[in-house]
Amino acid sequence: MSNFNQFGLVGRNISYSFSKKYFTEKFSKENLGENTYENFDIADITEFQDIIEENPDLKGLNVTIPFKQSVIPYLDKVSKKANAIGAVNTIKITKKGRLKGYNTDWFGFKKSLLPLLHPHHRKALILGTGGASKAVAYALEKLDIGYLFVSRNEGKNTITYDQVSPYIMEEYTIVVNCTPLGTSPDTDAAPEIPYNYFTSGHIAYDLIYNPTETTFLKNAAKKGAVTKNGYEMLVFQAEKAWEIWNS
Image 1 (tube, rainbow, N blue to C red):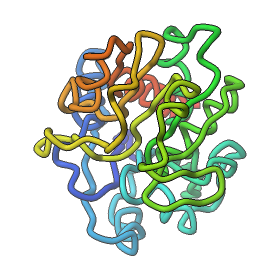
Image 2 (tube, helix red, strand yellow):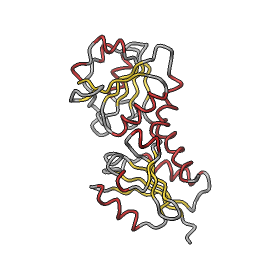
Image 3 (spheres, helix red, strand yellow):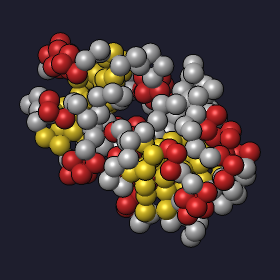
Image 4 (cartoon, rainbow, N blue to C red):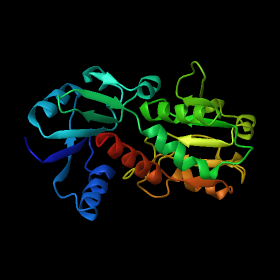
């Protein structure tokens, strides 16, 4: 039995990855030199099984865009929270080789948002409807904060970008960007919402962490909104994943 512990990130176009840098530095600082962390950059989720078969020392994986939902059928078990969210970003691999999926995104988001909240922050707009937005919605439910999704297409509890009116902006004082718009290198991009209606009573939260201040955050800050990027959320979710892998 090998003492070598391998961890990694599954995603597409992940050379920029926060996780590899974070865990490599963590292993170095905490004298965990027997551990390594690799990027598994795949074009399609059908390649996931190859990663498992070709890396017998794998103990845990993180999962990122665009596979947080499509990875679920490849798992033996999914935690209650991940099942409720409908997305997995952390996988624990047992000694018997069984794969269990978890979601630590919701935990990271909730913990990083908490210090910013005031009594008037009762409703949130969630921009985007992907796997990350589902984790954000779950965290907001746990905080007893109501929410509306904003997407290109109208649907259940979902409005379109052109339906974000001054009244909606006044009512929904937390706005969370869960879209990739504004990520480096396309840093000028931003969700099309009426930024003029942000106020000092608003929180603008962007899950993006590169760049540190996206155009979305800059536009909201100009109107006095409290702003936060996704870096702290990533740290909290990464530490929660480490806890799960070692439990």
